[in-house]
Image (tube, rainbow, N blue to C red; front, side, top):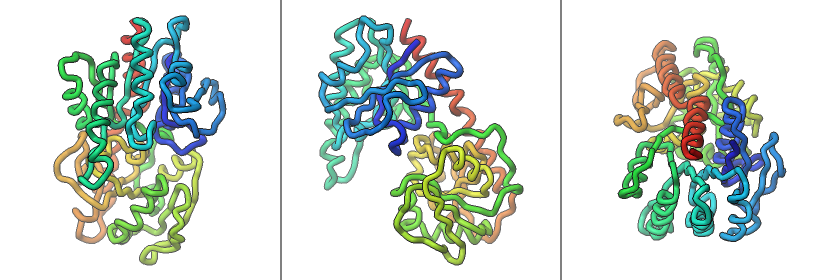
Length: 364
């Protein structure tokens, strides 16, 4: 079986969807002998035409005709498309008409075409003064059209799942919800916190890490004090902040690192800090990476109600819930263990098995 994955980007570009899809392609090949060819939906993407034996094409312009020229046709055996959908990844305002119209046309042309859609996002919303507010209904309409032409679809958040069920209206199809997996690897064994350096990691894209330092500096400082952190390692593209210390704790700017190096660092560090909306942790590959490496995830905020099975104080630690002094490692280890166990229910192996089953069922 060969599947065509439509993505927003691939390495060497920094693209979460690209990293996710490439890791999935590797696992599908390794465990299920399912091959992948990629279509990159970004004309500005620059990369190889072959990545690890996976053929790569890209659209040269955002048009229905250009997309149709790249999609597998009836004469080919490759008639299954796996779309990784996030509106803003395919159009500046999150309204990729060219993509949806191209897939609709492709589906109409032959009964042997099959579409599986992974909704990494559904549609945006925001305050009255933002473009997200004014374009929300258009984005929603495009999502409805995608649901209608998809033979199967899945998503990363239970909240997205409920939205998709509403959009599906009377259409009956299988809906699977799987939080994302770590895109920097999954160590087979993770050392206990007691055997790790008293090091805190801040990892991710530039904007996410700037938000950590500028929006949650106080909570970061409190975390370092209460966990007796000796060093902060900043991993990712340069932020330009020129940090050297945070309340006396040295900050080491590591820059961008390979996935294997980041994995090694996380496996030997005590804690990892993130500043991410708690409603969306299930779709964060950074949070997934922290959980997969048995490190203590730390958030500047806390939410009492569980979201996607994630609970404050059980799957992540927050200084706002822990106003006392140092906490013993047994308590912190329990949180790290819970986060690790939560992750194992949807790790890469589990997800590849789920995707393989969906693809096999769709192709019948």
